[in-house]
Length: 192
Image (tube, rainbow, N blue to C red; front, side, top):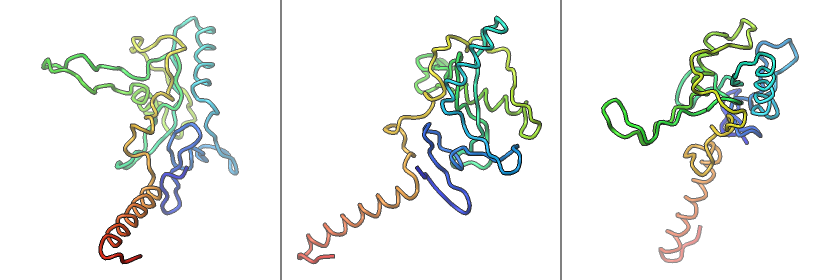
């Protein structure tokens, strides 16, 4: 689904529910004439990697697969989690209190995205380093059956920004035509 387009860029929601430029198809850091595609199931890929690393090393590790995404209303890009396994993707602080004792009602940092962005600072974009090791957050590591990065994608019914520009325009235009027709019809029977 094309969410937006302008100049030479199309922002597309792909089959995974990820909204990205060119649906996540990337020609950066690849040989001429080739592109990189996203994994078919990034959470399953992360699970397989985490299971293999746990077996090979005996260490309980989590794996995050990231991709570089733009953000609406902000310039630049940042890495975000598109796949995750063996790690809590959220640090749900709701129900706790802040430093002043006030209740935390909505505070739920997406630590998978935060870790993906931090790892990208270490890996860089041009050094051909595909992996970063993050230490010091073993409190986030757990079962390989924890919800993966797909759980980060907001459900359509809770997403105020899901509709793309073309869809918003079409819906607004249709509603405007109906309202105009009703106004005219209610005003002496004139027709559009």
